Image (cartoon, rainbow, N blue to C red; front, side):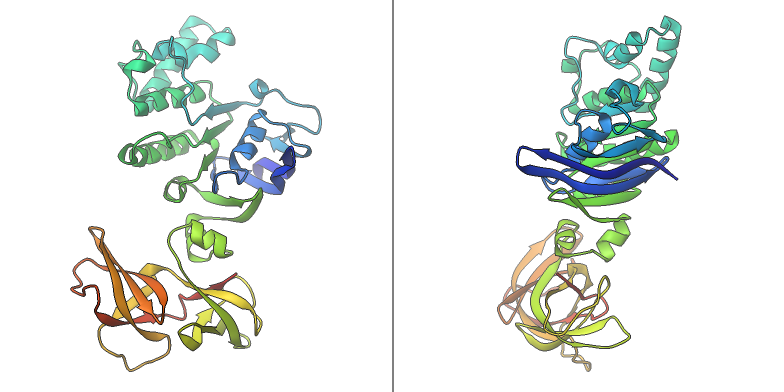
Length: 359
């Protein structure tokens, strides 16, 4: 049963639709990430859950209680902890007072406050820094303060709005795993907002990809990466080669089709998410790591094409070849030790089982 239900949520700002009648169910203890580009509606959705925005239509149900349709529930009454992008820690308060400020408003005893504070300080790795001011902390430590403040009241729901976007790449990677581990240990139902697809794939149980106020695909990181619902999702999650073409043949009772492309009259592909019709304009799409490089012409010829390496990019543990096939550029990920150089010719095999059509 869903712990959070987003029901037909609709929200506009003047003439702009921010959230377009979306439906989502979030399980108890689950980490769901709202992923998408700027302006897609992910932060507005999060703010509606928190009670910081009010939708024109729809409702949000948390732990079987309506937040809007049966009367507006104040943010402080929703059992929510929230972590913001800019930390939002008070610069004039020491770490300890930042963390326990909300508990003091609840008029808990000093002993109870100290017990809760000590527990959360240990959880987020801030023991020994209680008497420092935010200006004496690194960005990562300030974000830990914000996380501790959100968790100290034992919330039912944790909301995180791009909490790592202001940190450097190495620290972001470190804190992703820390947040994921911490949330799982505590069993808190969490909603995480980010535009970083790598971050979403690492931290999430499930991902809701959003675009223009709509949820365009919902699934695990592997489901979304391996079987994107459309070109937008495939382009946003990872790297994909898109080859514009037209369906020229459909094999009945299978998910196999043939597509006419700029360099092939009949290239084999699959249709993982939908049925295809002859004459349909599509994109034959394949991940760079799924393209196979051959130095000699193989015996099999289907989906094998000759091209020239235009660019070669060394990225440490692998190479990117940018291969020109009849004026169409294909990106190929290959082992770092391959000796081929720019200007050399080779063959690429676009495995029909891994070459999917998208629209």
